[in-house]
Length: 611
Image 1 (cartoon, rainbow, N blue to C red):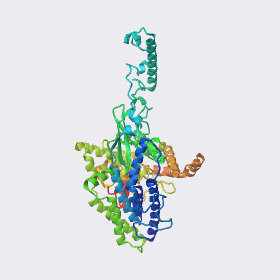
Image 2: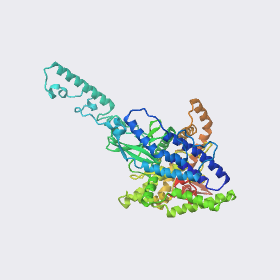
Image 3: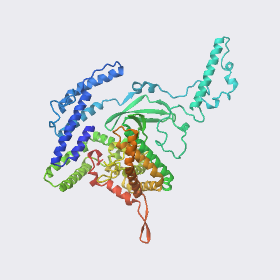
Image 4: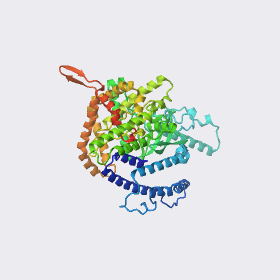
């Protein structure tokens, strides 16, 4: 999928006929040929296995079956050899055997073939097969005797002596060995009671049902209504894991979701993701930013009266390349809506139709002798024409709202949901614009159907090659595509959406001085990680890099503060009178730019601007 996405993106950029286009295409195709050779060597090369583990043997069987089924066909389609990782009879200087469009067609066919294979994977797996220790874990209180885990009796001095008298609960024994055993059991019970009280499993301060808490209950992963010291005794604790692990599809990958049953009766579901440390750290900084902004909203009188809030999306690192993220059952991604619609209504893939039509029409209109200025103008006109054709005849702009209406029980519930979604999306859209987070593909647009909360997966700042926050240019400031626009409704967009964006920006502007040092720390960490994400640097090199980037950090912080300030409501002087700038002066311009078809049609095909 990643290689196909790169190929389609390159084909979209090289859609205009040009001599340079042919040279670039040959270079890219040669690079992809080497990549496919390495893929063949990795997945289809014969290896020896000496393990005797049952689980390992099962994996080996699946690997052998996969090679038997696809190896010969893969090598024949792409002319590669899995033995040495090089092309069959092709040197490094020889011309590629396929054109770019041929590679894309073959990759699309193989993607469909492998997706059909992946779709046969069971939707759930027994937890005991994946992790026996987690399946056997139970965090319930051991029911040994009354009050054994009660902190009121942890010292043993407050008990009623009659309750501790062995003769009052059991018959006496004349055997000395029975007396010794009874005393040993009493001593062990007292030690267990004291240990239980120290761990906080009693019924008073520090009480809970287990010593392990459900992840994501501390700041900045959660925002409380009051800034107070955490109270672990009020947190949900882990009782047990659900007996089955769900297998779900996320970003064209199969991932696993486990459920944790908490002491409060709720089931908390988390997605287990393999991610590089840079992504995890970036998501943690996003959660920290959301936590700070939510604190400003609670302290601002206008935003507090309108119940505005920004809820962070937790990212819990488990290992160096493994993390957990909350994934409730009410989660809905925009890509799922499109996938289900294409399956139910048998629609063609709009991104493929978009690229094919653009290439076809440009080849008929533009030639290699056409001036560059005319090429750019013609390309924009063709893209706009194809985009409007997709919106009119391929993708319905009411696809999302029809999907959501299945959840609503009444028109009142639908109205309240759309109103709450407008407020949450306003906060998310403002952050998209301020931090230049333009790559909000359908996989990254996620909402919760039960409370209209907008989640922020892969929310990363876009930098230029020089390390500055990227300007908008021809890109849209935030995602407001036709389906989202229809789901909100025109009255909500022109009303509470614009007003909420302005109020949030005003609250941040009010706390500008308090936010400045926090923002500098966050941007410093982010740009350092962005520069050194592919390099393992020592402390001295990191400090030297930090001194070199201090000017860029200051410039980026100034850019962020300026964008917050320009979206906030303000009062300006005009002659001898004070005139108030309307709340929708700057925000309305951003909404207009986000919904402009001329800007949407220039977005990459992976953005799905018609959705």
